[in-house]
Length: 256
Length: 294
Image 1 (cartoon, rainbow over the protein chains, first blue to last red):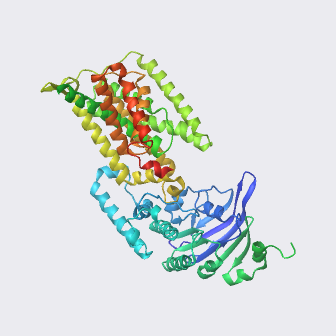
Image 2 (image 1 turned 180 degrees about the vertical axis):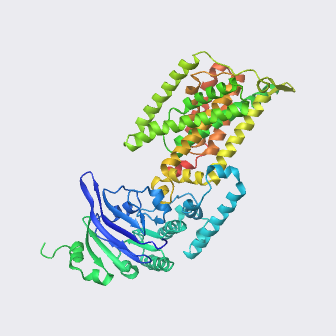
Image 3 (image 1 turned 90 degrees about the vertical axis):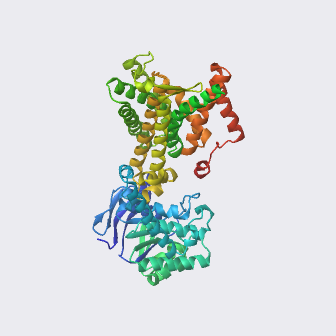
């Protein structure tokens, strides 16, 4: 049950008559990095929003291992072990890095309102344990020196790392990364690639939306290509690079 | 000197009830960013809940609990019936403003129908009748109890917001509902909890102020809403310590202007001072949250 295999069957999403995703099916294998690529507006982020439950899905079915995610509320999907980052970074700018990462531990906190007043020491101990876990996580991501800085003061690349740390803090089975390399320089992209491989090593399934073809080729085991809300190709990075349909989608038809 | 000290005592006990009410307002207006004009009606409702409980012979702490839970339930109902419905249907926030204004007027009407327009008073008790004279300064037991109860409520709210997962959830929802969802926060339930807390604080404040002046009337919520709004703007929107400080400040200013100028100038001076402060510091005295929201 802890594998983290994602299966998506013929999911679809329309926005007031405009088809954003039209019958997409793929599988993100447990412990692998699966790339979701395609030109702008091809439905990648919409797909991710459906997997995390932020958008209700119009048709199809989504499963994580043997659990159904279709039509499940986002916070329950998160509780099942799905974490993500956003294309436009969403951190609490005036809060510390540690406080931001601590948000990710929300679902593992069992201390609701009544128990806070019932037994305070237990809460404090739990809070300390969660903090210790988050600090370890920051060390693994090599941003522990920034733990007490305000998230808004960080460089772009570091803010991305903090968002990834927040996602990992929830101890997910499946991690969704929405264009994590956007706006990064070459060196930062290199470090991000290493980080994604490090996450893969720890056994977490990764679904990656990315435009940077070098990064995708470096980290992905398998790639799914979308165009106009449809799946146009699927395969290993080498296969995808030679696929005529993909070349056409990105570069246009030669005779066009 | 004793006149001065007397006003300090009176101002602090009055200000503590303002602070309790304003904490609820800042949760709704500042943290959730929802315009709820019925917050004053919850205050009035709480005063009546507490009054009826006291008349049934419940001891004061239990009557306060009735006021608090009653106010909280009113808050929850307002969220379920008005605000959630409007959100789901994509209503503009002005619609929530008008709908909650309508709810407030309805509640005033219902209170008039049930309890009459006459001012009502709490039954006589040792709490209301005990007072001491210290060097010409009269201190009522009630004033001390109100201050203590207010401080306890403030501490409980601070603890809830800072230390519990509920508080973390509220702060996350305040920042971004999407972020809250993906870290596993049930957004709808968190908003509901916040309405309960805010309504409960309003209800408790209603009973406290109703006791302090020993006056309960269907119309007591309206001017309180204006005061609550003023205090949270003064303290910085969404800033709970700011709301507390602003509440005490408004209480003191009001009491002093009555004692040293004239009771008819109370609101003119109180609100005039606030106007001045805002001209000098438009983000409020203790703004911090304001920048984050922007």
